[in-house]
Image (tube, helix red, strand yellow):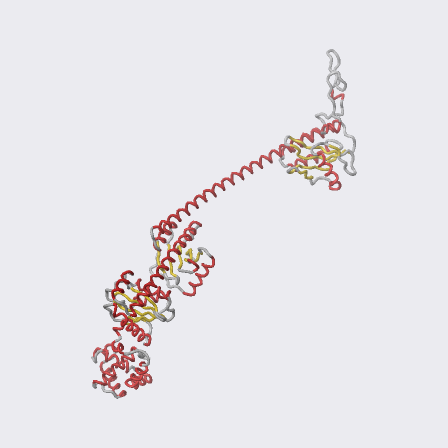
Length: 593
């Protein structure tokens, strides 16, 4: 290093030139070696004290840039030197210190980089005696100090500069070692953190795989056991701990598994429900809507309903979503299978019912119906269903069949161009089928006609005509929606459909026209009074009570009826025609209004 630049002093052996003479006993002491070389630094020199101070400063900091700055600042204190530039080795590259002189940076940089770790002369423009001093340590090259001197330095000054260089290199070695220890510690910490993350991820993957396997096994076990909708929703409830519900295509509840089932399920809004279905189907996965996590049941692109989890506390995680998706897939397969079976069964039912309505032999009818689990040996009724807002297609036929099953009415089902026909075991309830279909369709614009009882299969064609007659009478009545039994038609069972309605209107006009006009002009109720009088069998007390009027008021009204209509209620023929006319007026022509 500096020794090569300044021809460091040679310390000779005793007796050699340049060695201090030994003192001999009995003689005056010979001057000491330092006294013979006054150009070497002594411990009392100010420069030595400054060097000790900067030595402490160099080792007090662990910042490599600060160490280089201190060394450059102190170069001028040890002799006629000037620090022109300083370099630090950063990732194998020499990076110049900001304290260097930029005027001659490029020339100096090129020379310093070519030294590759050795000391060497440097030509600094405008300066003399320039030299680059390598800052080497145990770990290799830490940097360079580039110094110039305005005059020839003494040996002592060279020695001080050399000490400063070695101290700077040592301080840089300590700082580099500390930095590397920190980097190693940080790298070790990073590796440990990465290992922990990988372990957690591995654990998460193992847990996820285990949960997915549990979901798959649970639903596969349900499928293997032939479990239906309730078994699938039950398994999903056990896997997630959340209430599970299934809605049909129109938003009506099919099933609920778990706690919290409402006493009255809210009636869906058709427009909003359809919008919700399309939104969930478009997003392609479970979607949160308010307190529910919803998945659409959609085999082969056709929406059959909705599977949902009630998650009011927003506890659902990725495992819950996976279980819901898997259960929705299983339920889609189940419902698709059931629908296919229903279509096949409906087609076979249709063939049998078509034969029964057209007339077929009883032996064949009994055998075929028994294959469907339908007992034709029991009393049968023919039921005809027409819904104004629904086309009479296979979908509506399935809806009617499902509604009949829901009200406990075992039936064989077929369809015609504008209505659905059922051959049902036992007499249907007066209103149950109609009200169930109202809930299924969401509208009340339906009419149902029910035939008289049928004891044998060969009577079914005639009973079909009776059901059609009951349906037609109801559709032409003032209250056109609801259920009408053929047995309740009374006189109208013998009246046929078609142009005879015009004749009926003329008949009613002939016998009740004047009373109808009077009621319209005076806001009276003479025709209704007459109808109620006949319904009560001519009993004054019952008629007055049903009309909530006094008996004297009833007598007055009957007298006005005689006067206005010109008909005598005591005449048998007039009385019969008036009674028929009021019945037709009330049931078929709309009654009051």
